[in-house]
Amino acid sequence: MNMEDMILVSVDDHAIEPRGAFDRHMPAKFKGQAPQNKNIDGRDVWVFDGKAWGYMGLNSVVGRPKEEYGMEPLSYDHMRSGTHNVKDRVDDMNANGILGSLCFPTFPGFAGQKFQAHPNRELSLAALQAYNDWHVEDWCGAAPGRFIPMIMVPMWDIQAAVAEVKRHVKNGVHAITFPDNPAMLDYPSIHNEYWDPLWKVCADNKVVINCHIGTGTHAPHASDESPIDAWITSMPISIANSAADWIWGPMWKKYPDLRMALSEGSIGWIPYLLERADFTTAHHEAWTHASFDGEKPSDVFKRHIITCFIEDKFGLHNLEYMNEDMVCWECDYPHSDCTWPYSPESAWDSVSHLTDEQINKVTHLNTMREYSYDPFSIFERAECTVGALRRKAAHVIIEPRSLGGAKPEGQGERIVTSGDINRMFAAASAESAL
Image (tube, rainbow, N blue to C red; front, side, top):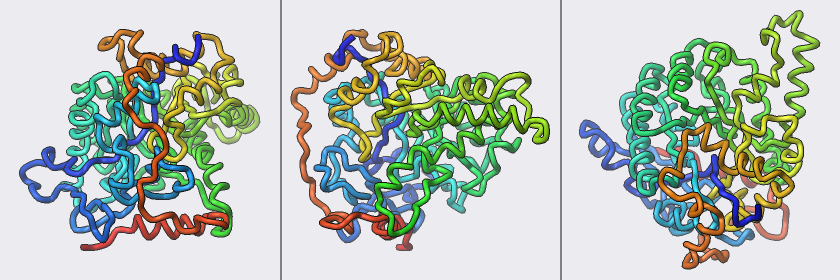
């Protein structure tokens, strides 16, 4: 196999919701109450129930010179159109040699946190369902075979969450987004029976629970004076604590077909986590009374938990310590970690030492199986390779372009610190009454 022969499917990308995304999907009862995007003082902000959130772009810097990277942009004009226009997104996927993509929300939060925390439960449920309908019908439905649909669930009402999963399973949805640690959002922990109906409906319908980094537990900033590089470095590994918690979760015994994913968590640290988990059981089980019924914790992880990588040579050289059938590739478009438009080159550099069978597994076959995603029912396999897709995209401009907008605070001669980013984030993301 060579690079052009690979088939790439990403299990972690992001969509910037376009203006008007919610409008036609909100029930008539809530006419005029749908989340709206408005330009205020040159910034595009989302307004919902009388409050505005300014952190709209969420690091959607793809296609810009790296010197302009930061926790911006703050308007659609400052973003590449593929971030929010589905036709242009498909063009960008072709230019990057990517066949399929699973996209997390942006304005609502990766796990719908803005809706989960909203006090008006009836209105927030309507907005959440409107988002799901937009995502399934208007985003994924605009390009059949190119996207893996994923929905949010109303965590505050477990029966409504079950109903929402059932509603969209009928539409071919086999993925939900869920916080890596719901207890951090003041919901019951994953060890609580509260979640059992949700786990059951997901297991019964082969629906993957996708837990993106930062949706519950956050990578801590060491100090305001620390270079932001240190925080960025530790960000994927920050999900390790939650990963350990999921290993000891009670749901695996109850629902043996259940699957979850550590989205954007990378894989290089997994072998030690599993070694440590097995050590913990061997040394402490007698007094902690945690039982794996003759198995090891690592067996549970390997069977139930999907992991994913952008670039991770170390992890891919140590697949024998993981389950190579549960490792998937991701692009992270349009965030600053994404490798667009050279994802095939990046992925090939990481996987080229593997066998053809292993390359196919981690680049697309594992994802197709676990997410019930079958693009080959729509496209000929030969149309789906890196080389074939890129040939469709000769018209796409991939050279970095400055799209304007304010430069991040701290950018220039001196090192950008965590304090700079924290202040910027606070100013941009704080809700404000209108």
